Amino acid sequence: MTSPWNALIAVSLLGGFSYAAASASVLLRHRASGARLAAAWSAPTREGARLLVAQRSVVVGSDRALARIGSALLPLAAIMAVLVVPLGAHAISDLSVGVVWFNAMEVLAWAAVWMVGWGSNAPWGVIGANRFLAQGLSYELPHMFALITVAVGANSLQVNQIAAAQHGQLWFALTMPAAFIVYLISIMGFSFWGPFDQSVGRDIVGGAASQLSGVDRLAFCGGRYLLLTVGSAMAVPFFLGGEAGPLLPGWAWLLIKTAAVLAVLVWVGHRMPPIRMERFAEISWMVLLPATIVQALAVSIFVLVGWM
Amino acid sequence: MDAIAFGVCSVGSIAAGITVFRVASMARATFALLASFVLAAVPILLLGLTYLGVLVILMMVMEMMIMVVFMLMYMMNPAGLMPMKMVHNNRVSTIVAAVVFVVLAVGATVTPWPHGGRRSNADPTKALGLDVMGPHMLVMVIIGLVLFATMVSAIVLASARGRYDRYGDDLRVRPPQDPVQGGLGGRRRGGLQR
Image (tube, rainbow over all chains, first blue to last red; front, side, top):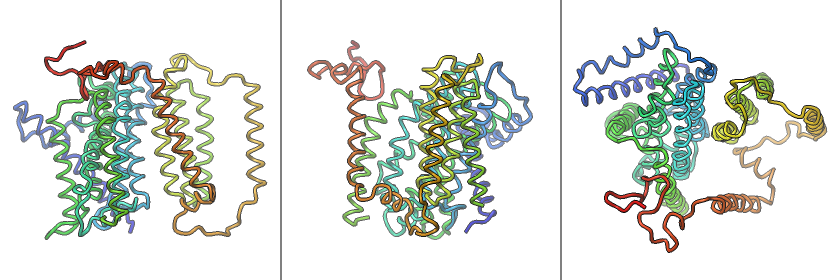
């Protein structure tokens, strides 16, 4: 069932959860620095309002078209990815290839971040942009194998069927733990969050986002939280049994699980030190990629034998 | 509806393709080419080949993002700070383009396309694969594996640093001598730095 209401609800929820993630992030920062905690909840609003009314500064010789398309593309990619996130029994558009669609939309972040970094005509911007690509090459292959494992386990690329395949069974988080962990890592990768924020790192004064101002900055930074949220929301049908759960109705469990994954990611993002992309490349190709391949093999055998 | 989408996307794809040669910056040219590819994927979606269509978008985005780095590395005047001519060897390339266009156009018009005949059943992706590959599917799959193995071996052979560089001639050097420390293995606290 596709209705405009579904789309409206899904996008509002996406926005709401992203706002909460942004607030929680500020809260953690305030707690660490001893600033007033109560101010954290309104901090994203205040910052957003400031960015909305601020005049955009323009760097001489910057590629404004690319930078603006890029910063608009980041939230758009998240919103297009949310189309296939199941909400209750229905996603907005329950594509038969929902997993591939989700993957394609989340890869748009590569283009978005690179456009913004390059378009800024600043060395730090270009360094940040290329850092994101380097990191992307590291997390993307394990990420794809994790998605493939999920699809093999459920025998479907349709997100609702993947959730349904876990009903009355062990959740995929338990039957394919390596894929689950890699998926969580890659959410932080494609939303350049926490330990993976090298592309907008402080050591390169904001990297890809260093020259962004005004509404462009709002779209870019907001888009990052939207991506983090949509990744967390997708973890629920992929690995956490979708809307399965006792007592409460299904949609409530969806929201609770999404909030839980998002909270864990925000917390981890603040606890973990940054990991440089060249070190992560080694870890990713030597540990994560073999782990996900073995995981995919194991799940394929389980499916063939009939255990899943 | 489908016809409108097809028209818009094919015109858009061609326009974006022309843009590639009109802009003065390699970055813009890359993204114009990406736009052209993504728009060309929509007709595949219109054919009902959802999986292939979305996959084309996914692969094109990733591929062009790698491509953009190489294009910037290898091209003169990558940033478009000075006006740059994106076309070279005009006469020959015009002739080649015209010949290719005529051949493709003739091929497209002469081919006896099926007229609304077979409705493909449940899985159009599978049906297309069987139509294209026919009984040679197994051979093609094996060729795919061989190609992949060739690429990996070529990279291993071409790589300047192998495990003997990292671990020494008898593979006993610990920690390995990485040009970049950290990650796996590497320098430990108090370990000898060579």
